[in-house]
Image 1 (tube, rainbow, N blue to C red):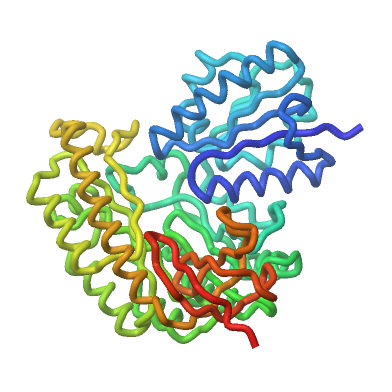
Image 2: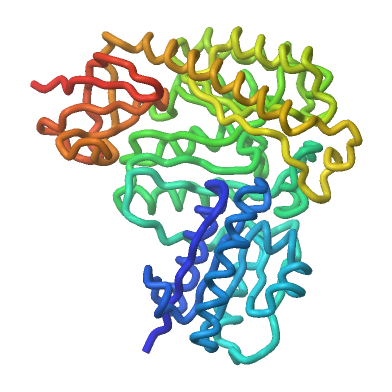
Amino acid sequence: MSKSFFIETYGCQMNVADSELVTGLLQQEGYTPTDDIDTADAIFVNTCAIREHAEEKVHSRLGTFQKIKQRRPDVIIGVLGCMAQNLKNDLLENKPYVDVILGPDSYRHLPDILQRNQQQDHVVDTRLSRFEVYDDLFPSRQEGINAWISIMRGCDKFCTFCIVPFTRGRERSRSVDSIVAEARQAVAEGFVEITLLGQNVNSYRHGNAAFPELLEAVAAVPGLRRLRYTSPHPQDVTEELIRVMAANPVVCNSIHFPLQSGSDRILKRMNRTYTRKHFLDLVQRMRDLIPEIGITTDIIVGFPGETEADFEDTLSVMETVKFDSAYTFKYSPRPYTKAADYTDQVPEEVKSRRLETLIAVQKRHTLEQNLKMVGKVVDVLVEKESKKSDRQWAGRTDNNKWVMFDKGTARIRDLVPVRITAATGVVLHGELQEG
């Protein structure tokens, strides 16, 4: 009888893609995925060490797994991913019920580990690799519209606030052929949109192929309706990349473009390797070549040493760009990072106040940008039923805005024309243009 496994995922989309990879790997070995944690033979949590909140949630969840282990001593408990890489000593010392601890480069060994004697001591493998990209392994995905395809692993940027280079290692890229093969398989399985995924996705390079060449190769896959990517680094956004986006109708007119700070002094402290002017020049170039482009961003407030003047610099960039949306965060120190050792940490109450201001500004900009869409007819890819009404579909525009509209004759996976009639916060409302 085949054994079953349960996997729970926290953190970024890279972790979701890794869990799909692990699922595919185990299924090839005859293991069956289950949603019933109380009957699973093995329980895994794929963890995140990037954000403190995600780490806290994992610690809490492990307490639940401990109770299951007490009831069923034979069940295997495993911790995978960035937190396993970062906190292996703490897990070994304080959570002895955890049987398996694997870092992001060690998933290939999981089937062999599960086939060994379950009563052995802890299995720990958190070695980082300069070569592992899982090029020959395909993930097992749930049914859906969008397939996430990991094109590279690791990061070479060493931003002073970021733990990724220490938990995921240095940059290495998959071959174009393997990525295209996975894209073809995803389309054959019914996925009509693909998002290329990497820690710094546009620093991709394999042989003579850089990221623009990869975009063109994947966009040429028959049956693919839309192609997106995330997240790029401003330093690696080139004129060629922008021109490929503008020229290819399959490549979506949207980009997640992380600012982090609008202050040159803070950007230098963050080791972001670009300036405020460079960032703004790239935004202008994108809008010159792709007028309807949607631009989203990441912003950190309260980075060590950030003054009121530095924060005002960030607000002024926001007023200049008017991002379509933003992921905003209070800075939190992460182990092993340079910024954690800075002595001029910003008080928590100051960070909270700045974050509230930032969110208010972004809400205004989001509504402003969305109101520009009212009256336009845009193509919407139908993705799912609206959470608020079973009579409506929810789908996204090419520039990555969510639209709700009455179902009519449209079906999931259809690309349909919708006239935008209203904008409420982050959501657009529209009417299906039938006939």
